[in-house]
Image (cartoon, rainbow, N blue to C red; front, side):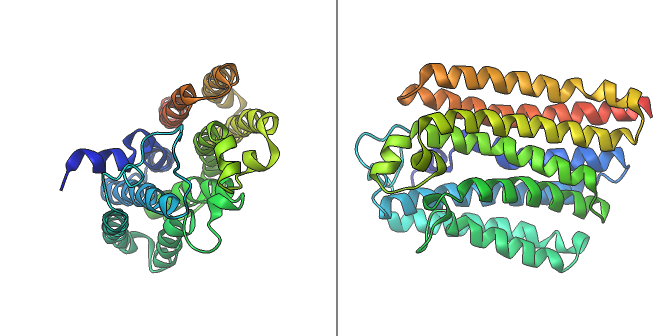
Length: 302
């Protein structure tokens, strides 16, 4: 079995999307003195392998639906190039998902049986995103799925297994990261808007056009920064001075997002937009870093 094609199919440059919400939730738990290394690692491995499974399933499903045609602008797809067979890719997706679920089951000891239901929904979403009769990515619901699973579920679930409860801080952080993660999908869909329409893949940008796409990317980044600020307000516990110490962090992230947006609309079309996809993924990791720094400030000022 060739190793490099599998690494490329897993799309490692996008994996910060799955690792970052676990880091954010753990930073919030650390503020409360509830950080726990074992559930952190279990949640991290579950999240990363679930995303790998989703990337492999997407490679397989898009090929089966004829969406990966000649002239594709995005990163190479291993099935479309004939490097890996559709059967091998499907098996790889199932194996990755099985690994994710195996580690996810370890979280039941920390969060209770209810996590089995959450894990089952996440596992189902791996394939429903791009496969099945009504794949979410093809009917304009991909953005909703990203906010729900990469944001609210990932942050909230990790926070719950470490602290035993949920709260407004984890809710705002989940929305904040969910919209930040959606900038990665939006960059992808902005690049592919013409091909998606031709392939009847009806993302929001394929449906509503380039002008909608450029401002949608801008707005979801603004929302991410807003929800980050609201999370900081909760973490400050009503102390305005502490909140002022925290506010620069959502501000820094917003500046980075605005610079990425300006670069995206300057490029406008073509393979050069892959740089925006990569930058948007890096931005999610930076957002996680800013949450960690905010947690350190809370600890130092409390």
